[in-house]
Each structure stands twice: as structure tokens, then as C-alpha cells.
Image 1 (tube, rainbow, N blue to C red):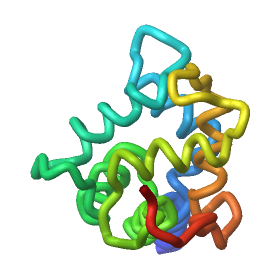
Image 2: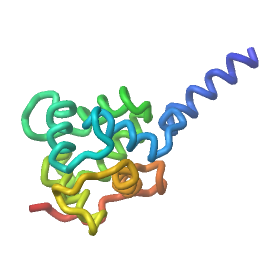
Image 3: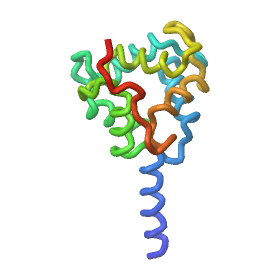
Image 4: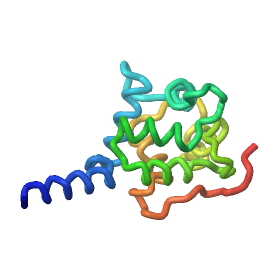
Amino acid sequence: MLQTIGLVASILVLGVYGAGMTLESMAAQVVHRVNPSGSHVTYDQLRKFLNVNYDRDNNGCVSYAEFSSVWTAIYHDSLDVATKFVTNMDMDHDGCLDDIEVLVNGVRNNQHLKIDYPLGVHDFAVVLEVYHPTATGTASSPDPGVVG
């Protein structure tokens, strides 16, 4: 009985906190998935990866449901954390994560970077830190206004 309670508690904790993954380890996995042969990715590679792997209905918009289902399956965040994460990245709060938001969010939070600048794991972890709810507990988009 005590072992069962411990197992259930472990599963709940792992689900809430991304299976114990740090943002740096999540960033390393993202960089590797986007560019398996390299240690860096560009925003253009990230944008294309997002469209190919997250935009399930190919409508140019990654919905909260699309993002959350893929993110939770790969990175083991809870559905609640994944939904908060995509909500934080959605700058115009239209329920859709589109290309421009991905690019603007990345550049806005890494002023020294350019769109074609290769991002290493640490750089990508900085982007995650701004939006991932477990990083600050209260992450939100820096500009809730319309992008474009």
C-alpha cells in the first residue's frame, strides 16, 4: 500500500514538473530534435519544425490543443503546464501560435540575436525561461498586443 502511494505521488510530481527535466535539458532535446546533426538551430529551423511537427491540420496555426498534445507526449509536462506554456507564447491571444509570434518572441527576449543567428542550448533555454510556467510560476507574454 505504501509503495503504491509513493508510486502515485511520483507520477503526479513528474507530470507536473516535466518528469524532472530542467529547462536546459528541455532546450537540449528541442535543439537535438530540430537539428540532430548539430548543436545549434536557427529561428527559421525552429519555425519550420513547429509547422511540420505541431501544426497537425496544416492551417498555418498551431492551436493550443495541437501544441499541448505534442509537447506533453515528448517533454512529459502536464497538460496544464503545456497549455499555460503555449498561452504565454501566444502574443495576440488568438488561440493560435503562428510564425510571427515564434520569431518575434525569440528576438524580443534575446536582443543580441538575429533571426538567422544560430541558437545554442543555453540561448534556447533563455527563451523557454521567459514562457515556460515552471520557470517563474507566472510567466506571461511580455506584450499582449497584436503582433504584426
